[in-house]
Length: 227
Ligand code: DC
Image (cartoon, rainbow, N blue to C red):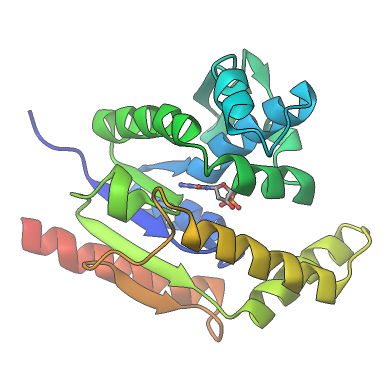
């Protein structure tokens, strides 16, 4: 059986991974897999359940009740939590912060890893996350590490909130980004780091289209080499 093509894009929160990974997937006609959304769905489950985040055993136990599945509707990823479409609730700060905390748990990670590997085995994917190139798909043909400065990421998030008419405090956003980076990069299991064979891209001074083009150029080059 032919191996599927896997493009792994890792990097910190707010580097533009999902916007860019979606565009890359569309151009290549691959499936886009947003792994952060899976951790966010788990976070929603734990928030609703009122799970004590300082109690690892409680997180492990309550996580077992969460059945998380991915579907594609009109080409968009939809995340189901115990059969309920929770996609509209995924992108709040509260859920993002809880996802960062609960994703430290080894049982949560194992559950997500199985699902992610199954998806990548079945079809050509562009998968974004934190540990895709290092742990989940170490044999991915293309690996990208996409980052940007804290200031640029903070400003992007700030503008996003203001555009939605929501309250935004730039200093607070930057502090949360720093905290999240620290937690994601220093956790003992599958921390965020650049894979040795990943191409590093700093998007601080690049437009979305420029980053998308740069990644597509890496894909073309690597896939040509593979034959
Ligand atoms: O990419 P995101 O902001 O949607 O991710 C939310 C959190 O989920 C992130 O802070 C850490 C965790 N996460 C992870 O541990 N591994 C992944 N592959 C993706 C996300």
